[in-house]
Structures are given as C-alpha cells and as structure tokens.
Length: 310
Image (cartoon, rainbow, N blue to C red; front, side, top):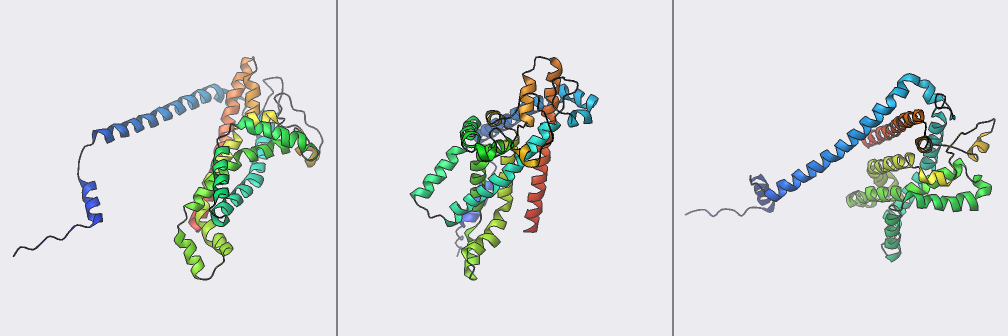
C-alpha cells in the first residue's frame, strides 16, 4: 500500500519557491534601473567632490593652519575660517542642548504615554508636515520670535537667535526619527517589564529607551548634519556676511552679539568678484565637509558604543 505524502508546511513552500531558479525579466529590469540610479548618484557626488578638492586644495596646501586660524578679512590673502568654525560649533551646541532633549522627550510622550486619539494623530501629521517646510520659513519664524519678540533675552540678531532657530528647524526631524525608533522596539520588551511589576516610567527608562537608543542617535546624526549646513535661516536672524570685528566681551555679550558660521562665510565669499575669494570658497567648503564628517564620526562612535553596551 502506497504511503500518502505529508502536506508541505507554509515555510517549506516559501523556501522551495525562493530556491527555484526562474528569470523574471521585470524584476531584473527594475533591479538594473535601481543600480543605474545608484551609480548615477555616486557619479554626481564624486564629480562634485573632485571639483571642490581640485579648486580648494591649493589654498589649504599653501596656507594650511593660517587659513584655519585666520579671521575674516576684506583681503583674500589674510582671510580665514576660524570665526566660522567657532560659530558653527556654537550653533551645534544649541541644537544638542535644545532640540535633542525636547525632540526625544516629545517622541517618548507621543509613543509611550499619549492616547491613540484624533488629537495625537493630528499632532503626528503636523510634525511630519513641519519636517518638509523649507528652511527659510523657519528663518522668518526666528526673525519674528527670537529677534523681535524676545530681543531683551536673545539680544536680537545674535548667536542665541541663530541657535534657537536651527533648533526649531531640526526639531520635527528629531521627533520623527526618535518616534520611529521607539515604535520599532518589540512590544514583548514592554510586556516583560510590566510582567515583573515595573511601572511605565521604569519600563521606558530601563527597557524601551536603551533598545531604541541606536535608532535615536542615528536620527540625531542626520539632524546635526542638516543644522551644520544651513545658511538661509542664519542670514535672516543676523549672521554676518562681511567683516566680523572681535573685542573684549564676556561670554553673555558674545552670545548676544553678531556671529558667523561656515555656511554663511561660504555664501559671502561666493559673491565676491575676486578670483582669490573663489578659491577660498572651495577651501571653506572642504573645511565644512570635514567638520560635518568629524561631528558625524563622533556621534557614530557614541552610537556604536551604546549599542554594544546594551
């Protein structure tokens, strides 16, 4: 008597279908199209980087530390980017101290505490819409709010106004990436914490946030990179595009005074008709790329170390 074959399980059926060697023309064409788009993007990036390095490497090779430590000047042979580097790091400090805690806290509330109702969904949709608003709109908001309304506190067109404007600019991106990282944490982790009698705060603090930390840090890296490269909002809230004088001021006076950043220095030099300033522009772009890479590298190292720890 012939034995009847046992029916295949779903897993075995899927594995057998995947192992069949069939040539799908549409899939191959789509895969080829995606590969071509990737290669085209990389080619454009390589061409741009090569042009920047070719045009700016000479200035860095000739002047080196003098260019990095030099102040802004109307003379191309004396102009440097040190003031722009300091301004960019101050902007970055504002983003880290203001946007990151507020954004991560908002994401934790929306994902872990807020009820799933119309108000919460309305807030979530608007946060996602704000992430796509052009940066110049945030510059206009900063001009009205921080430069005019809060002038007694911020000093008007000052570093404080610029830093707070950039913090508002990247805040929706921080909230979105942090919320997605929290949403990716399996519910089993939360249920395990509740099962041993932990409170919601203890579960969030000891289980959810450590599990979501790599994703949250990845979002902060993207936000920081965007903030470092912005120019339009800073121009609207007081960034200097010419010579910036320095004097004997205390820290608070400096924070409420005029400032520059690397993107605004590049913008100012790009408008100069002198060809020497054109070479300085490319050299400043190289410095800006190096600053962004260093900031991203530091954040990635912290993320990887935190990921190994947990």
